[in-house]
Image (tube, rainbow, N blue to C red; front, top):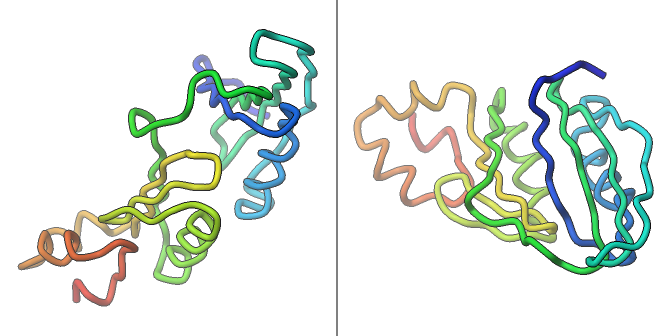
Length: 149
């Protein structure tokens, strides 16, 4: 895994505080683009059983922590944008995250753990320079590239 000076830590809540459930969930959608480190059991904390694991997704390192009891839920103050190559890749991530999560607007969705994602085409800036692009985006939940053309 690569060295990062600053490593974002995401705090999840799972049954039993098992971080492996979270790692497996993201491994399913990111496949070989997610490298997982060792799970470190931290034991009983005020939030119940706690585990932590470092992962690297698309070359960026993250620390994932899970507790048995929810302490600080994820919210809109922290999110990820995924720049997708094409509609097929948009559909892959969107469909996966919303299967047990929920749709929002303008390419935003929330996965089953409460993490917010904006799933966009990598040429989003170009698409937004087209006439009526704001109206198109505001009418969409999942971004559909063909509607901008």
